[in-house]
Length: 458
Image 1 (spheres, rainbow, N blue to C red):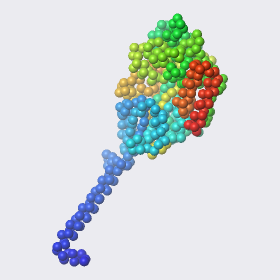
Image 2 (tube, rainbow, N blue to C red):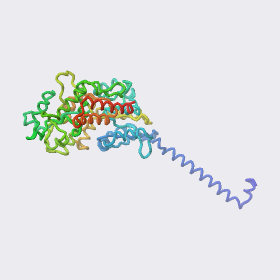
Image 3 (cartoon, helix red, strand yellow):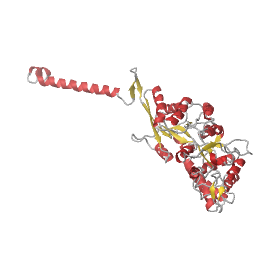
Image 4 (cartoon, rainbow, N blue to C red):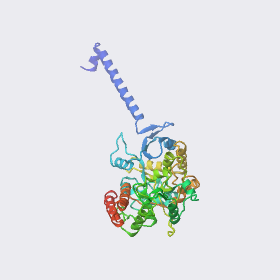
């Protein structure tokens, strides 16, 4: 039977009309669905002028700063980059290194994506380098980097090829002296001396003992590891001041079995032994002693100021630069800070670096510092990483010492920073508590560290 026959059959004509109508409806639905899908594609977005831009998302793991502190800055970048969304989250510091390392190693998932942008400590590069994107020359050249930031940043974030850069710092920080103003005033001293001889002389004057020789007030927390929060960093600082050659170019061989290291560890542990001790392993940790007003001076990074303000608001304290060796004409201070890096496996590495560069610019650093103080309700923001903003920190409470020290700060590319620090602390414990010789303790620490670095920094 053909169409003509069907048309002649009046009984079948309504069926034909209904079939054609149904077919047309199905075709219309398909066309509308396709049009809607194209318009709402997750990879595109219609702008205000009707043009279509590609949608891109960057996952940004931060530290210290809340979403509220970062929101205004991120909004500005997004406004200047239609279709771009920055998904920011403030990570907790606990287990951050291991958590970040694991996420970079794993494949990203919808529920837990690997970050495109994240913070790394200035000592971590050898461990993370293989997973990081190199800073493109068209974003920032090595020459521009060296002119914008302090020498320690150029050294800390330069890769094994001695040319490529892998992070841009948004802050600079380092070890400094925290001092109890009231205790120093009793010795008619306003602030700690800047040379080691005078500094230690003051520490001895500020140390008090009872009739049995037990320390009741310490002039300076120095000499042990278990009850000094930043003992390993202090030791690294002392080794750098002695100009010890700590690590080779491959970042797999750490050197402690030498005369300079032996001299540093001997002098360090002597501060907690004998009749002239200014500190003891039997004391509470340095922070607790400082809180209670029984410690005149301690060495720590600037952010410890927040701990003191929160836990001992009645303590009047100040910060000062680390003491220097009179015999050494070169000023050397110790840096410990963070830089923003980009995931090598990110699908938007160029955009990610554009974002990091944007964050590092003067306007954004000023805004971040201000927001941290107002929105974040902190006494001060993250100290500026840009050299041109050094003058902004001078004369300001808590960060003036950073302004003085930053141009002369140094550090060590450790990779497995936590592991190295633990080994240095254990060496001090072996010397003090197990009567192990300095030479043997350092030999064991060196062996332990190098076994680990050979695996992690290869």
